[in-house]
Length: 212
Image (tube, rainbow, N blue to C red):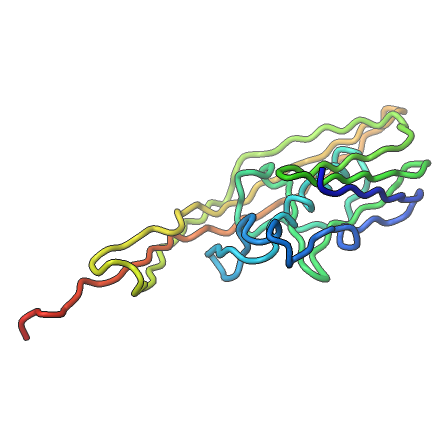
């Protein structure tokens, strides 16, 4: 384990991810770990890798603890390593992942960051609530487009696909909390993903030596 942190959240206290994210942007491990959105319909790699893994893991820990979710935002494009729809990203100062400890006892949040793993563990006194979730089908599909960019570094007369296309769509997921007295609380969220364009780079054939 590279780093651990423990945070105490009192009853009715709001927990935010931002103050707890241990990211050193000067460290090699924080660079080019994952895609970072720099322009609409296109990914480019930059500083910031690992932050979304932290946000998504924290969001799901809070989600399945059955606590109120006050703020979260999914990525603009779907990333296959995350649960469909049920994921989160971060920026500063927003979006953030914000939730409330509505248990009667103090909640302990233990976070561990390893070489290839982020673990978020929530500890407290259970009150009998149970959490179930259901994710609906993809809806409202939107087709991607093709974007072509000239790249003089490629061999003349060649092209290269640097980003494969993916459709955009909406997906709805629901959380049902069943409490010890049998009462239930249902809440649904809808995540809308933008289409991811196909990006092709090319370098036209050389005209050197061609007849005028």
